[in-house]
Image (cartoon, rainbow, N blue to C red; front, side):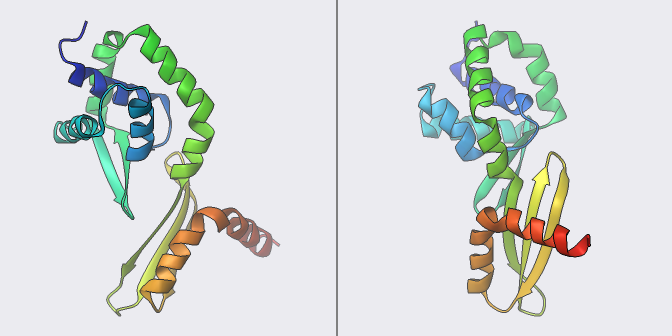
Length: 172
């Protein structure tokens, strides 16, 4: 068995990342591990931090949300140590991802962020991603930060309607 429970937390995270074809947010990883009572929030964050330091995972942060993906080094590590995760834990993760992957994928596939450009206007980038490609990648220039925040906040709920409108309008 694994000497360190800390190592087990890292392997669980790597196993979760290997089983999905999209990045997982910090909240999604935390929901699984904390709900199962494996550890507390602070130990989990320390494990994730160490995984970033050792290049087992990489992170992209968009509007205060961290999106984690496994690196090639993480894949090799998991291949070597996957048997150290009990079959019960692996089965539980598999079932959890089977039950929740649709919602989890939708949560991470619709992304919006904004920044101030050189003309002191705000640019809002709205995306719908599927695996490693973009279904839509739209950048809008708006006059205020308030407008930029509003667009970002509405993108998750209105992206499908925008995509449908664009396809219908432009494909005619």
